[in-house]
Image 1 (cartoon, rainbow, N blue to C red):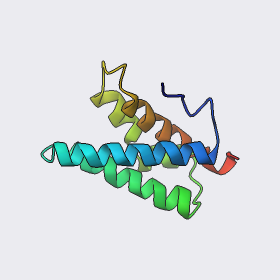
Image 2 (image 1 turned 180 degrees about the horizontal axis):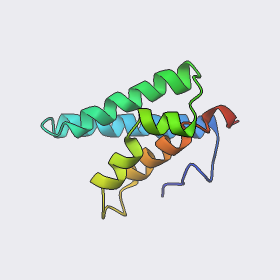
Image 3 (image 1 turned 135 degrees about the vertical axis):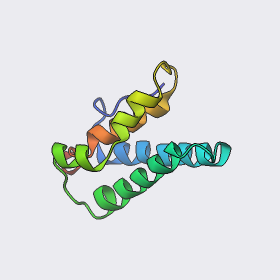
Image 4 (image 1 turned 30 degrees about the vertical axis):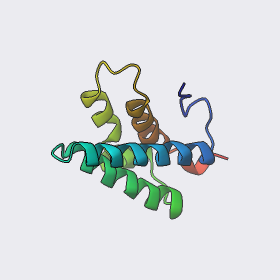
Length: 104
């Protein structure tokens, strides 16, 4: 069972969720190469990994919302998939971007 980032707000957990989402989206790209949405998600996740995690660039809520559409994509494209943790992870990653510098 997936535990939301808001319950375990650590950098280590954020990175775990991010890496799991990257594995999932890579699988989705291989399984359904015609769905271009997956490429967009992959590029955003890689950018978050590079800028937020590795380079430790701080983003405000507003900057994160303008730069990354992960949360919106998860809400719009995975409606009715309550048992699927993938959209929850994408939403949590999008939400956690601005909080990452404050996490332990």
